[in-house]
Image 1 (cartoon, rainbow, N blue to C red):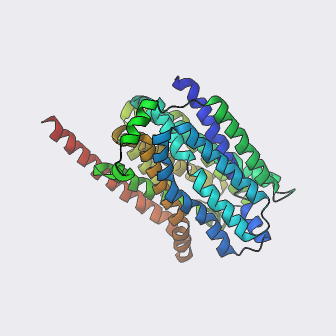
Image 2: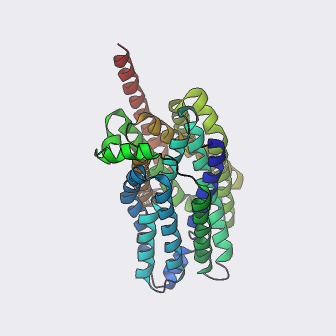
Image 3: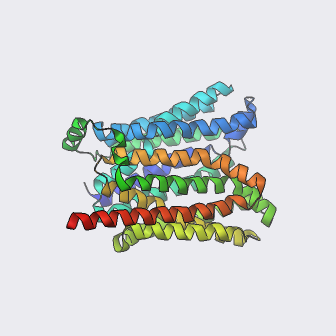
Length: 391
């Protein structure tokens, strides 16, 4: 299977999945309100989706090691479509909750399986490039999705959900028609015999990488939750301007993931790229404190986004290259830690913001320094292991 032919298809699939997911983001608060939901219930509605992903991503990753990537991806995208159509016709809060739970359980199959697919079809040298392309597709889908949702919600609150559902069905047909299975029958048979726990990937120095991903996501989710209020208070940024700022950051991050990560991991190795990403993110957090208008806010947030864009693909590449468990088990576990950061980040960020508007960004910089120390410890341990093995 030619990687050059498959990666663009995978890019398109993940782009469409994230467009569908992003379309509903600006609309769901109003739909929840329409069916009688309170702000607290809206918070729970958003959290329950990530909570399902936290529990089910490792399971789907493991299943994809056993039965193949394509069937699991089909389940994930079909589940996403189903949840959108249920939400489109929801007339009560419990139906919305049911749709979010179904969507969370089934769609948690998408990201780990896509990353495992990339790990299957790329050589270790090109792994960073492949993971970067998936990250870029996800980021771009997340930019276009909310913009489309915002436009179509003006005529009807239900319309964006139908569009998201149709977009998911188109993606589903693409996967069925074009995407070939990447996980060979031999490898699947080998994986089926392997009765070890999916937590096998969590042993030894490698487990540091999972915590590193969680810290990075936690600080990013805190920033995403509070930046709108911060920018409005500190720099007088309007909602429309805010949309543009996040769009600029998203493009910056996508360019880095789609173009730079692959080259840099090939030249300097994943470790150097992770280290650089953490440092750039920390600088971004500190610079955000000095935002004074539209352009400073856009530039400083983009610096943070670029740093962040280096980290996830490099961690994914490093884990799939270094771990002895199946690619699906590793990427599923990584997605689970990612989800934990997404669940814990917003309430922590909001609480810190209520104490002081600068605090979410100061704590983000502190967490970045902590992540850097963690990484240095991991690096020292692996170097020591390599020295021992060579003697």
